[in-house]
Length: 109
Image (cartoon, rainbow, N blue to C red; front, side):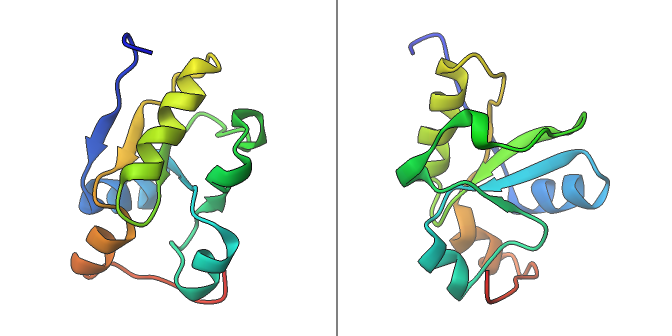
């Protein structure tokens, strides 16, 4: 996996990209975490059962992974790349950074 790398995106970059229809946000947190606070418009593919094939067709959008703090999203990106997918972006700082930036969240998964 040495030839794989993951690019950091800020919460503002991800939010803007989602609004503009350029990014598909894939939340790799567990369902119990998503039930507490969720990213609006994200799809959930938990890392505990992660299979890159479970990611919906991004329909021309770039896939960006997200989690709580930014660690699991890197793991998911590397796993997707190992599976042959060019998904090399993640939300640096995860939900913690998203909330610190004052971006909208939703509850109830």
